[in-house]
Amino acid sequence: MFVDVHCHLSFPDFDNDRNAVIDRLQEHNISLLIDPGTDPATSKRSIELSTFYKFIYPTVGLHPHDVTDMVPEQTFSELETLAASPRVVGIGEIGLDYHYHDHHPEQQKAVFRIMLRLAKKLDLPAVIHSRDAWEDTLNILNEEKCSNLRGMMHCFSGNTEIARECIRLGFKISVPGTLTYKKSSLPTVVHDLDIQDLLTETDAPWLAPVPFRGKRNEPSHVRFVAQKIAEIKDLPLETTAGIIKSTALDLFSLSATSDKHREKRNP
Ligand SMILES: [Zn+2]
Ligand SMILES: [Zn+2]
Image (cartoon, rainbow, N blue to C red; front, side, top):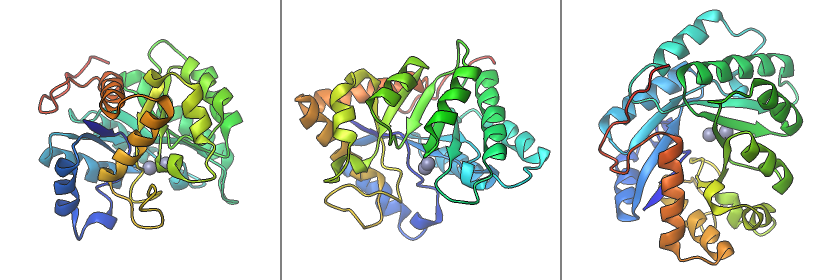
């Protein structure tokens, strides 16, 4: 019933108890999970994990935190090769993050464009990470806009106006567990948007929702995000979860039965 469209289950944080975490997914009715890569190594691990579990799908990306002074050309060819793997459903995490001081903004922007062009070339949705960088993110998306550019803004942290601009550009708004925090401004954004434009995620192992705030997050907690969206939208939980799941299936070109592999589209 529930979907976690952004969870780093292949990260070492889950090495000691990954099987137990996966068992809890079934227990809590989480039927689809997207595990994004952040560089060639983590993208590869994510693809490997997805071969064992049919309801887990990988994406291939280069996180802005992993963008240094010089990204070797070889990194991009490695990523392109990985992205051609039949299980891969998207390109990401990619994007811009200006939160820390030594963030190489010019290099981040250049890499973001290269990766967006890969998404367009392979006709895959982009999984975008944008933190303290909305102006540049939206400018680049506007400049790179073309008919098959689409995707999701993961761990959305902007306001309604920014969300509407992202939606206009072909992106869904993915809501993390911070929605449940007391001081969060996300409830207003969720209230203002159409439910068809929303997705649910955990970004586990980070950002655990209430009542697990401060602890390691895990994908089964995504139900608390869906619950909160249902409350804000004044809809039954099942209806809410059903709409969000069909949005996710549609965005990532997956069929309703999670055991069926996605049809590979021609680039
Ligand atoms: Zn991120
Ligand atoms: Zn992430």
